[in-house]
Length: 520
Image (tube, rainbow, N blue to C red):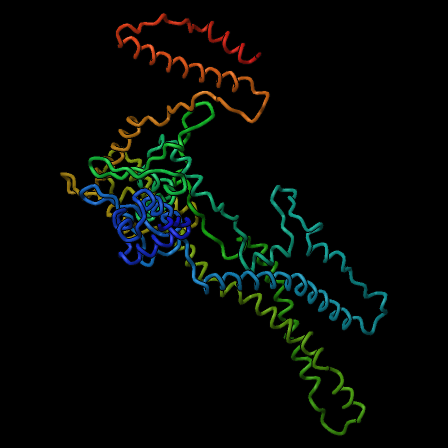
């Protein structure tokens, strides 16, 4: 007799993943059950779990069948190659090293060169008259205590070393919450009473419909939701458990929409002209001095014309040793040059990032007209006007008609909009199909009515002093006893000659029984 061997969850997921790869990335539950030997329930749950960790979407066929569509190769979500991850690590390490080098080098060489200049100017004077107040400059460089503080005009003042960091590497942007998308989706589910569509997530995220479907497939797995199909083929994402709450029932507000989450233009440095000029001036001084020191030391090593004293030649040969030449000339020259070179090297990537942000902002602003225009007549001219008004506020280049038309056509293609024209010949897009899907989702919300789920009474608590939970448990037990007793009397009444005298199980009787059970 063979013993049944259970597969672990990881083994089931890998088994399903390999089956999806062999099947060509788009499968049904039946495909997986036949290819893996798993039961229908196990296969469906494994496919949902796979959607949570790998790139894929849920699709619906014309006959209402649910399809699980994964990207070719069933790759992990947010997959990055080893080289991509290594590049980031190398850049972070170089950035940290350079920050330390700035702190140790820029101020040191500035002070050193100042000392050399003063020594040259006062070489024939009394040494007591050549004092130099280093403490004042160090205080200026470190910004007093090294912390950010406000000036008298209320603006934040930043230490010089922070200004240098921002000049070289750009201003540090706030770190994004890795669970922000899931938080927004959870709030959207509550606001939509447990039933959402891909279009609902689009107006919050501003992403393409394909990316929204991919996200919702993952959220369905994470939040233990279900994908349901209406009679007209609309795919709904239903989250029954998400609507259960132990708090007072109230309507959850919608999360912030995509057009209220526009990204500002990213400056190459900290964006402050005065700060940048201070850094440029300081580094330029070091650069010029390093060039001067290098050329001066090279000239001092040239052999003098005869006649000359042997002692003079010996002095010139020993005047500048290789270490002095490197630390006073070569190293600060290379460092100062690099300080100017890095921002120039970052310029192409910064331009690409701003172009990406500008395109994303244009799409989000176009979505605003698509979702909020009550007339449902979306024209290029209308969107172009509203888009450029916002772009100017973010110091971004205005969008031309061709760019706006391209964005609008992309959205219209994703949402199956229809191009129409008025009697006057004005072309516009009508998103009737999208509005029909939204209406179906609204009907489903009313029918399911998930917002009014009753959790019932609390019948157990780990707190031994919770008398309410104990009373509720006793009430539930007595009500179940009453129900069983009533069912027994009904059966006895149906049998002739078995009529019994009904017992008194009024509320007062139940209270007596509860007190007797509580005090034996």
